[in-house]
Each structure stands twice: as C-alpha cells, then as structure tokens.
Image (tube, rainbow, N blue to C red; front, side, top):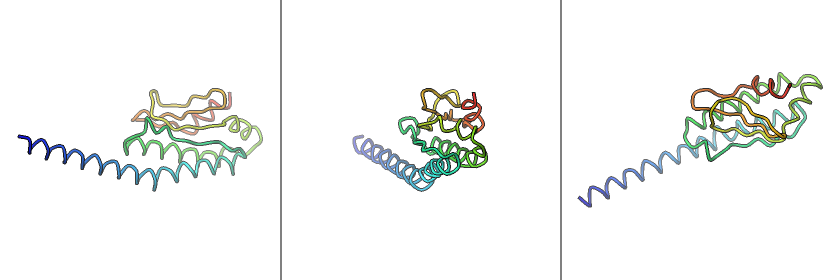
Length: 136
C-alpha cells in the first residue's frame, strides 16, 4: 500500500515538473518575445515608453500563456497601423503600463495610466477594444 502511494506521488511529481518546464519554455521562447515586441512596437510606432507586463499570478497554464501571446501580437500589429497621426499617438501614450491578465470578462480596462488587457479562457482582448477605450 505504501509503495503504491509513493509510486503515485512520484508520477504526479514527474508530471507536474514536466508541465512546469513546458510552460517555462513556452514563456521564454514564445510569450516573452511577443510581449517584448509589443513594447518595442508601442515605442517605435506610437512614440511612448509603455511598460508591458504579464500578470503571472493569473497566467499559469500553456493555454493562458497562449492568450497572452495573442494579445501581445494584437498590440504589435495594431500599434503599427493605428499610430499614424498625432491624435492617435496621444491617445495611446496615455498608457504608462499595459498588463496582460486572465480575468473575466475579457476586454480592456484603463484607469490612471494603467491598462489591463484581459483574456477569460475563451476570448482575448483586441487592439480595437484598447483604442476604443483610449479614444474616449
């Protein structure tokens, strides 16, 4: 009986360690470069230094990290096409920080220079949701 419990515990530990490595690798190789690219595009296209971060407490699984990656890609692609005039650049440069988080409902919230793009496990926040809020 004790041997079976020890074997089961070792299997669970092995699976958890493997999953953690896969997630760390995905974060390092896919997600962090996408987040860095979003920060770089905001600076180069819109002219403002926005601190782009990931809410690590809410984004723990590979699926969650995939949502973060998609939102970062939305920012990179959107900023380049959106920040083509002074008014658009001014709207985006209200952002001081931009955080990618898993929370319900999906969408964008903005208060006091801090923006949060939210992924709810099903839907991600789009760049259009961000600019719609910043343009108010």
